[in-house]
Length: 58
Image (cartoon, rainbow, N blue to C red):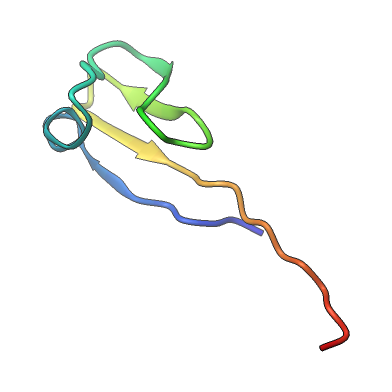
């Protein structure tokens, strides 16, 4: 299962987080649970948040 999966332009990520996101590969974002995957040459970045599910008898 995949959780939250926003893909946006690198400039949008920069405005939201203040981090540069200007090189290819994983980058840390403030308060993110997983790294943001950056594609510097393409000018976009994406995040796949961990999906946690709990089974409960309730």
